[in-house]
Amino acid sequence: MGYRIAVVGATGNVGREMLNILEEREFPVDEIVALASRRSLGTEVSFGDRTLKCKDLATFDFSGIDICLMSAGGDVSREWSPKIAKQGAIVIDNSSVWRMDPDVPLVVPEVNADAVAGYTKKGIIANPNCSTAQLVVALKPLHDAATITRVVVSTYQSVSGAGKDAMDELWNQTKGIYVNQSPEHEGGKFPKQIAFNVIPHIDVFMEDGYTKEEWKMVAETKKILDPKIKLTATAVRVPVFVGHSEAVNIEFEKPLSAEEAREILREAPGVLVVDKREPGGYVTPVECVGDFATFISRIREDPTVDNGLALWCVSDNLRKGAALNAVQIAECLANRGLLKQAA
Image 1 (cartoon, one colour):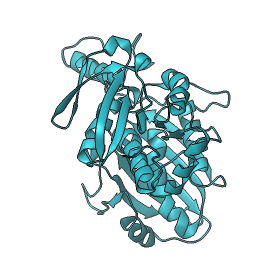
Image 2: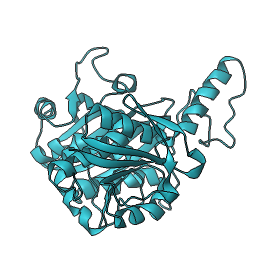
Image 3: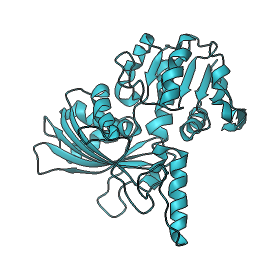
Image 4: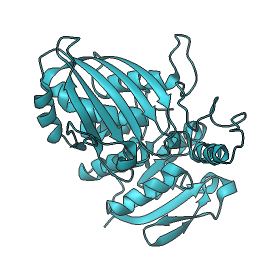
């Protein structure tokens, strides 16, 4: 027997990917419901070979639902996640609203799966930021081996992280440039042209000069992995449709050679090492699309600091950065017998 699942925000990039991954990973589903706002009522989405018609979130009764996968944005989550949890469903939330709430576990299953048990306080489990998720998957096994003290990370984040409109903006600007049209960006998702460009600005600026995206990586890594780790980030949007990349510099308390790190990462859950020191011997965003893994390449020692390593990290942000991680959290709940309403 399976579980009763609701997906809120089922018409969005991540919501559709959640449905795909539930089917691909053969999660035991007895009943599945696609939910969205009233304006998307009746919109059709796919679940395997089935077609689901979206129902209205505002009128849906969650009392028979075991798990709600929530991917409808911060405002919707702030209002609806507590309401849904009160009706008995466990909410796995993809927004940033609940991540730093001390009563809500922030979970990446390869890193801190046991934390799912903390859902009982509010009935909510938070999914981390997409760039944080792949980073901590790479850091966890190395931290266990040699204790990380400091991380410097620069991200190269695809436009899909900003939603479908952002993907359309990149597509339309790129097409326009090829036919000698001016690449309009006024009123779009990005403050500057994204086609054939990079933008060192994701989310809003904070008083200290960092952006909120950069702050999220710092705060979430500390909550998930270790509050003692010092981390600084520069988050950059790049003209890639899907797949986030990160250049990561790591300092350790104890010595760790590149070869030792390579062997540790090869055995780590959720990680695939592709690291040949030759042209093409690494993974790029194009190659990670549609895959579940976090790919690690370019592992090398940093001679400028004591006990330093540098590496390249790539993952499908719609999958590991969002939808896959949410489904893996649901799997953790099922495997640990924590679903109260399991059939």
